Image (cartoon, rainbow, N blue to C red; front, side, top):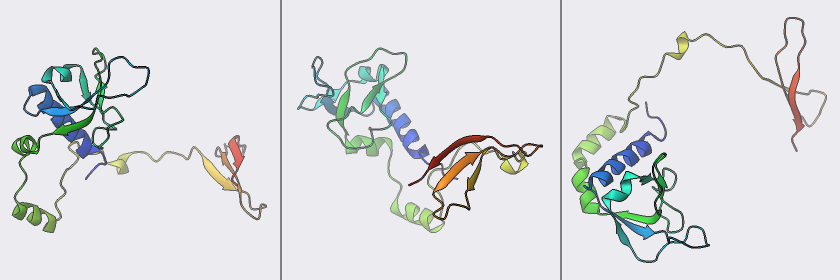
Length: 172
């Protein structure tokens, strides 16, 4: 079973490990140290030293998108912050050396067999064995309203038939 985001989390983790060890070098645009304008970066590419990655990491939301205006690095919680970087680039040769591509015949064979590329590593619990919960919220449309634009979230009725309105509003 494939879970959305697994491949990005795994790729970011592996790339961070290679950056820390120095097996993969990265270049980018460094944030200007003291400016009154937020997110202002230098115009020349610089190599990011492996020591930088001791306190910083790739930002999960922006590191996989090409940008020159948004920071693509973030502080590791509990570590001292450093200048941020954007416009990040790595060498294609280094990437292929660390993660060699599969031969075309193997990729084609896996596509024919419909083998999933990344699987979720932890087995999910069997949801059929869990007790079925009682509904917490009930959505009731008012049949008196011809446009049916009025709606309300209501709690289910208790043993006496009483119910309490949690929220109501008008769609329109």
